Amino acid sequence: MRTQFVMSEVGVGLRRNVTMTIAAIMTVAISLTLLGIALIIREGSNRLEHNLINQIRVSVYLQQECGTPAAPSNCLTPTERTSIQQTLQKLPQVKTVTYISQAEGYKLFKADFPNDPDLVKATPPSAIPESFAVELKDPHDFAVINSAVSKAPGVQAVTNAKSSLKRLFAFFRHLTDGALLLTVLLFISTCLLIYNSMRVAAFSRRRETGIMRLVGASDFYIQAPFVLEGTAAGLAGSGVAVLLLIGARYYISSQLAGRVLTPFGQWGTLGHSLPLVIVIGILLPAIASFLTLQRHLRV
Picture 1: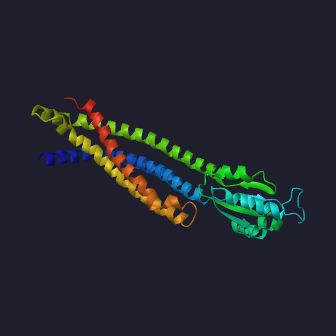
Picture 2: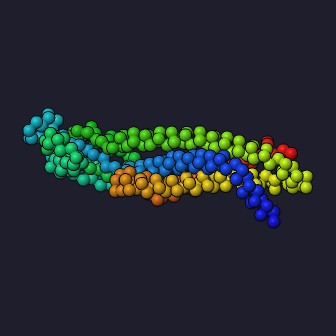
């Protein structure tokens, strides 16, 4: 009987403040959607970083071979090539060493720029040096390879893509921070909206709550309908946010299918974010409602 009464009071409260309830639902939905996007960006960038870091190969570029046109004074000799390869293979941090000839390097160069024929045409095969592609057991051991062979005779340069990836992931971090900042501001707006909604509801129903107090109703029993109203708004807002995030996941997945940014559209990335979105969406309005009632539901 008491449960039925409480639920009926919740329905009455939602109907009385329908416009504020809708505003609260939409604010919660927008806030949670932004939070979900921020979490997706963070989780997706973490997965992408793990994938790319593990695929990084260190490239040891060699000088032009002695006897070839335009060979420099510090040209590469066969003995130096063999010595560099043996040095790399002896390092415990190295998993595999693959020799890439100048012709093979030019084929890879053309494969990397299929949409830029002018660049490929302007680059002669002799401009692409031969190299060793080094796969590390731990991708973070680049410094070991660099110090081992960068000063060796016949070596032109030792590079990997880690510095470029750092800039990419720094961009994702800034994007996540911006989304989280907007989320915090919207959560503050949500709490203020719920505060005003609960204050108006407490004032409009002060007579009923006064009678309930006189007949011996507990604080919990009096406050329950109000807290459930806030919880209902939060639950509805969470539902809208979840639908929007699932829709965003399908869109991202269709746009990034088979590309390097695929982790952003995976179910695992979204699934990692949804539980926190739902929990915050339910608890935040409930807590805001409860704290508001502590001050304004005095009879």
